[in-house]
Image 1 (cartoon, rainbow, N blue to C red):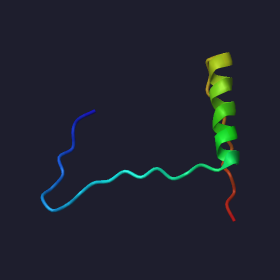
Image 2 (image 1 turned 30 degrees about the vertical axis):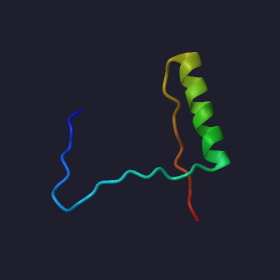
Image 3 (image 1 turned 180 degrees about the vertical axis):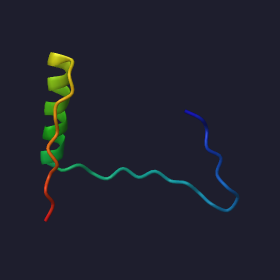
Length: 49
């Protein structure tokens, strides 16, 4: 991965969005599955309201 120079007069900032408890739990399950099996877990898209 290369280095990205900021253009003059523009500042790049990276903000992470906080994860909900449900999202953290889901991510932990996916990581645990991968470590146990070595395969990616199939993900079903989450319906948003």
